[in-house]
Image (cartoon, rainbow, N blue to C red; front, top):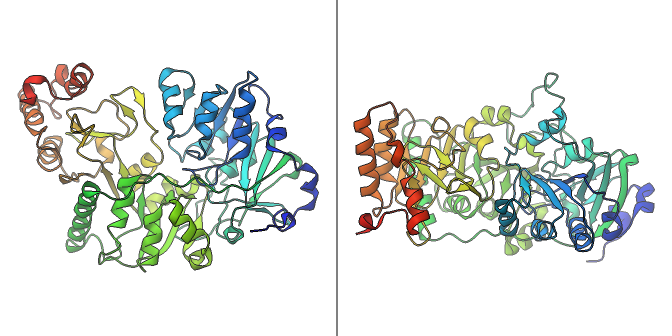
Length: 504
């Protein structure tokens, strides 16, 4: 597709700022803090971060990198391998970067995704020196039109001293008009967010630019990286079925209708599979209020099941990118893309009351959830937005397969090795084995139900034995402290969570 640059760069005074990615990267100085657009591989700044990584191969310098969430195009891997990152926040999913984080080569601040913007306003973290933001267009009146995500881009542009724009000519002009950019006032002066329905608009179609801040415009022509979501398998389908049955029971009890409540699902294969399971269900007139829209949301729209979907990013498989982005007119009246401080706002989430479905690494017999750390110490990805939604949603649901690593690891343990979501913020836990509704239950009732419903048969005897011994010690939440992490210590010692005598 031939693109006329003037059609995208409609603010002609910026034409003299056009330069290469390498030239723009050369403007970054040692010790700076960068705010990059991008949220779960959608709408990420692509060219300049890669040029910075190349520069890092021959020049020693360090920068702090803030984003909305994870980046595509191996940018995190390239920058961390080049050794140019001092600190990264608030979320990442890159295997290579994860290795550097866990070795201590770079610092990582794991943060609720709804909090970064206010941390910047408060000066609680270093200010952004340079914002590097991908755009579909720059309008005549000086608005930056984002691409497939908004994320933290508005606050980065507002707070930064300088702005570099990556004008992506492969992005879709039909995106213009889908965004709703709203920047809240500082806390203490903040007005309520006037969102009472999923598609309510409260802002502008683009990010206001102070043109004096713009130091470079880099022309790019590169699509987003496709999502890494795997297709549903038997176990994810079983989890989806358990949840669909749970929703049906809630309808029978009069707590939901066939429209359910707005749906939120975290990134990943399990959450995507749960939504996919609704395509052939009886549920209809659904709404989605989430951070990321994955393939399944568009499957539901195509099936006539979803009438409205709000997000801060769209992240799709290669096949779905072709079918959705080349036919955006088909979806435009059902979509809105917001800043993540709005999509993840506790105020808005509490008001709309969504069904929140997120992924756990492990949970314990009392319902505490670990979303971030393997064996309590090694960072996986980060808490993401799960905490924003778990604490404030109508239903807080966590899903995971009951075992990992060919059955050597149980995802249900006596005590989680790291707590991201305390039992008080968790309503429902689900594995392929079953679903445990924890609402209204005491700790002992929760333990009985979780062991019965969610644990793989291989690990049930050991967890039952632990719980029975714990009860002899008494207490509101019984534990055998010297054995509370026995599953994890066994894993470190034997390579499996069961001791040799328990395996037989």
